[in-house]
Length: 77
Image 1: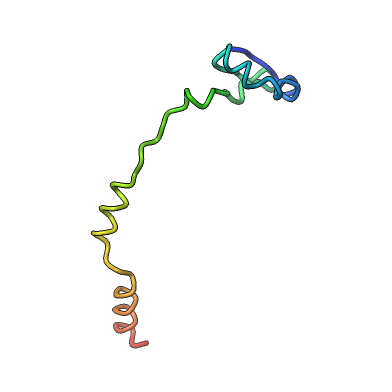
Image 2 (image 1 turned 135 degrees about the horizontal axis):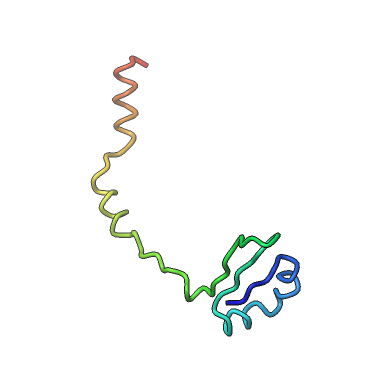
């Protein structure tokens, strides 16, 4: 893990990919306190697709047009 401050980060941006490849993690500090951790994209957790949930909800939820029509009928508008 490499520790750099905000000022150093500005000059390190052009070499950021190379630094992450060798160090695997960069800890960004400001005024002596850690404020961020920079990780390569491959190390980030992957989110699974929620397509199965969207498909299931699509079949369960009624059409909103009917709900709006029923509400208007109840209010007499």
